[in-house]
Length: 390
Image (tube, rainbow, N blue to C red):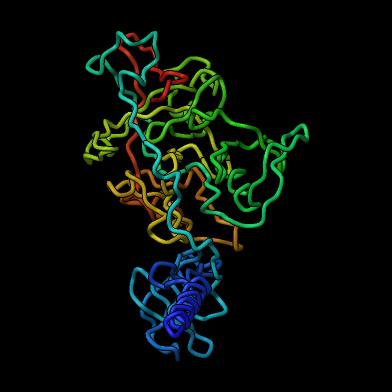
């Protein structure tokens, strides 16, 4: 009898331990991230050596991700990439995220499609040694991925099509992520995509990663980039006649930095070739911006634990833009972009009058050299629209 009592008490203690840890997640695994508030200040805001805020240690910028360590009166002790300092507590915004580190769907095979398979079927006779290149200049990358419900749990709501049909149930936060990312996968494995109507979704091809920007194109991890098509056409000049999304989509591009960094995707070295087959919001994907698709891997979100941020390209040294690369914000979500006529002609050596408060200068080390690929007859080399996956 005594032994049974002891087992019962051990069970109660174990249950209490599990509940306690679920209510108070490990702060090492799940840091208390906050966003810095520092508006209308290109030079940044002071972060101090002590809670009394008498001596400045470093400057911080709006939208930077910092870790809250503790609070001392009206000051917050924060961990910043420049060290530990004290910042006014009222000028920090707590960032919320689900206490989950990994999705089961991140185990999907992220196959790097071979270049010979990637190229359009009617251009297979063209070999890489016969490629010609047109420089499109510098581009700055971000990453996008499939939204995954198991990373965004919560109360379930109906998944409704634009026609009003219910096709399943999923968490509301997950569906919000699908609206942002374009495509997502429920915790039961159902793939859906945004239906281009508020709070409406449609079934996606269950054997494909997702659809691109139309014209029959699909997207593939570490091969697809989303771009601003008018911007691409501007940089191409006369290389593609009557250039538009309809004539530029499918264009193959080459990113020198990816090829040179010996980045491996499931053991295969990335050759630097990508397909221009998707598009993003013109408010964020400007003419020298690109969004790279990384499957179910991380997109580099600085407000998430490091375990949820990474992908093969980030780990290989291809850094993504983050909100604090824009130094001037006039409101919590109102960043100021440099005018195109003020962007530094030489990003490493701007001259007086040129703009230095956005990524063109502040994140100049993240720039990628992008080349459009053509054959020797001047025809654009194009990617295949849809590839059968193993």
